[in-house]
Length: 348
Image: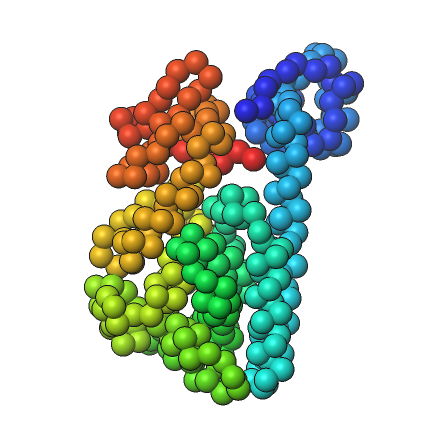
């Protein structure tokens, strides 16, 4: 957890985080928790009444963690751009296209090989308004991790990641006026959007030598255990295991993302929804493995509560997964007993 320290204005450095609101001339110059920039430092130097400013000081471990997350985000951005280029190449749907998919899957496995940081990145950033390419990279990364946790062999893991990469290929064939519409979609537009698994299937079946499991997994990734999914309304064991995994990854990323038509939800809200949907719509066994691993990554991590208290996560309760036990440096706070408090931000 970062410590607070009062520094003279002359010792401030660009990038330091203000631990208190800094006000100049009755206006907020720097909000609490915001990085201090060069213009703000120059402004503070002009104010004779500001001798010292309180900032958060990171220890070496915090600094290293932040650097790792910044590098990882750059990797996600690069892979997302490359996925867009990949989809344009495989539009030819030839044997060379399959090699491109294999090569991209290998990059997902080798470049996104730190599960804890990947989950934190997706929990914080999601895929933003990019519901195709960044979303596809996120879903492929999560699916690959969950496949490993479930003990899939190398061949199964490869085919699972291929399917995750290709699962929303059909969205590239949908008119952008529907795909990027800011207002609520009409029923007719929703029906068009729901055709994307079939469009994906129709496209990738033309790709030579693509494994049948990949093709089936793509068309079934919106099916649900209770039969409420589409396009076939399949239930339970009629749904391919790869599809069940991709469904979890798909929901997890979508909830953590700010789309054109809505803002992202609070941190850990996605875990709560995954748990809730594991009771009827998503595979319970796969969700349990997924949630157990993810919560393990977050024990000991720092978070900010809605009252701006910085805490460390101590323990999760699966039945109240978005309200863990936290420690604020002096007291334990069981969030499930406090309706007035919730986690509003993950601190990296």
